[in-house]
Length: 241
Length: 98
Image 1 (cartoon, rainbow over the protein chains, first blue to last red):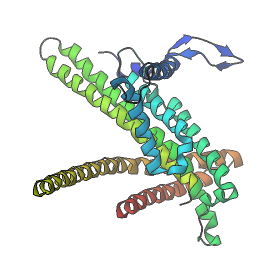
Image 2: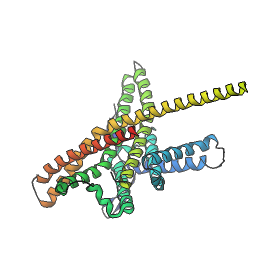
Image 3: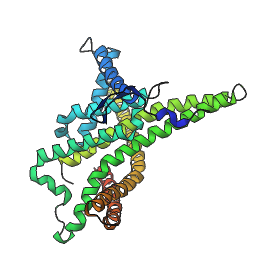
Image 4: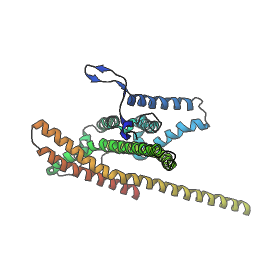
């Protein structure tokens, strides 16, 4: 039986080193590029003929658009619609990354802490930037809410800073853990099919098929949760608690 | 006249039925987000402690201390995790009341 962790290994396709830093093009980067390209291609193909009464193909991007639009309107309010492009990109990138990873021989970049962590840190940086831009000095109130006595400052300020920094962390852990566990489960059960052969190998085969269907659902659900939590955190940055 | 009234009544009944159905569906949506909240709580608690430990470790290295900041910030991180969970619970409660 092959190693279940082998699928998470990063392999270099074009090795490249600039002044000691390894910036080679890996299978992970290839999948990220594929995710971006496939989103652009699907949107371009579906929106080729734009009509007032949409065709089935045109409905796909339009319903996705409306889905995220409503999510932002519900969680941040009308003021949050300015940041629609960011949230929409985040959602599409994560959901295509999750789904692309399910294809045989492909690579799930959303199962790597480095990739998702960078995405979450980017979201945190955008949050802080938007918060400062909209609320100016008032943003510092995030770390010291109104109505708290000054004596509590040494305790409250570190707690609030940790709670702000733990947000991208919890986002990352949740997505990475879900994707990693799903793929390990898939690989080990697929390994049983080979190990058992024709004598009883059909049972894990059916099971693996069911898990793939379940993983498609989990991939979409986790992307949804990742996006909705980013929305909530953005809403926190815009309005005070 | 009578017939038209009957027709109108039938239409308004149908509209009411559709509205009821729609409301039921939106309730189902709420339960999905409740499940996601339940899964979020343990992750929130753990990540608070881990981030606190990270900050404490860096501060210890910075000031060349044994583990004073590490211990302090692990405790503070635990508190921050609980505060986060309490806030999330409060938010869902507020939304339900609305």
